[in-house]
Image (tube, rainbow over all chains, first blue to last red; front, top):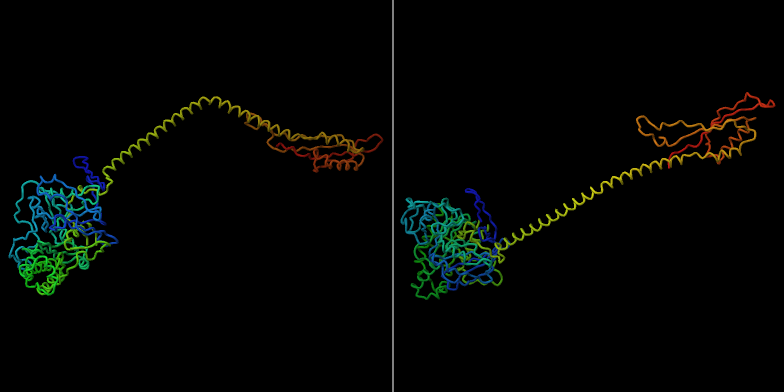
Length: 399
Length: 218
């Protein structure tokens, strides 16, 4: 609650737990992460994490029924506000919601570029970039889309009038009908930024009603949450937060770099590189149905290498570019890469990386390093990476 | 490593709601109102109590004013009584200080030897004390010293020494304790120049006995 005393004097009264103006504190010990509007037919992937004795415990795992209605695509849809209730096992005090929205954005950019986006209300999305193709930077010829973090436009088209202030780290601001939040990158001058239309943010914020567990404590973009899903991995902790990771989703593939526990690189692989694309390549080459693909990848009798190599080759190129970028720009010697979110066929990726890049790929289980509580059954854990990442990021704990 | 570096939260602080079913935004104003009411009752009680105390004080003051004359009279009477008590006490001192010498003197005749003729039996008056010291408006009620000593002078004539010695021995008996003490002084014992009839020569003597002290006390 802000009270304006005089023209230039104001006092800010904060009462924890009060909706109006109070700085509600996110519980760091018990929270549920939910991925909204994923492609999963079973529902919304959800995980409940409880921190006990400096270690994460997986207290609940599964799918929850999606809220009634759809994510609004315009301001006029926002009055149709449903309320949402989670099953009892997921009723922690706080929920971290990761949303898949076509209108959301997550990426890495300079402060000027972010301010320009705030001025114009435009966003840069995770769509593969086609700019600066063929440019040679850091001694590497870059493939189309394999650019470094987005820098400011040298000739920005500024809208006359008020220039928005660059938001403080972790503090969401509304500008030109969008809501923005930034965090600094490990690379000086660059920041990770997310944005979502204001009406979608409001809709998501009101989804979980007050006075009932859980209430929303965090709204994140799914890709940002995905990036945080490695935070509890033993490999990540052993490397002191300096690793390179590949995230495989159904329709896209992302490469993420971490330096000293801070994000430094986030790139979407150009082209169609998701798990669906891999299945399509296998289907076309080997002539097998989708249902059999996972068993074929696990079965040693059928060698999927001829079908996988054309698919994996551009990914390996992107991986090499990312590795070279981290080596030249951040003096990071990457010898091990975490492969996350791949349901099957990790050993073929490992073999390919060893042969082409002399790089060791590790494919840990998503919940490795966590204690699974009694009675919790884990199925399709790779589909819960976003929910896991949302919960881990929202916990804001120091490990 | 801090997970907060990855937390790109689009939910504003003002939008965060409490998951507790006890809604503080409802409870807090109620508690505030109850606290205000409690304070009002508290101050009301204190105000009422102060009014009662003030009324008590004024009534007590009036009562004191009304009784002050009687009180002064009582104080005066008490002072008079005290003064009289002191006088009575002083008189008690005098009564206790009365020398009871009549009975011993009556017995003295019985123990007096035949050959002793007393010519003088006197109690020497003690040195008078100054009962009106300089500057005093009223004389003192009694002597400043509690003990007063007197001397008993016995003078007489005798034919020889023996009867005087017998008399002195008799005065040493317990019956004469109230009259004389053991302390005595023989002022003179000599040949009397005057001759008795028949030409017999007489001896004159004078004895000085210290009498028991008169004590002015209870």
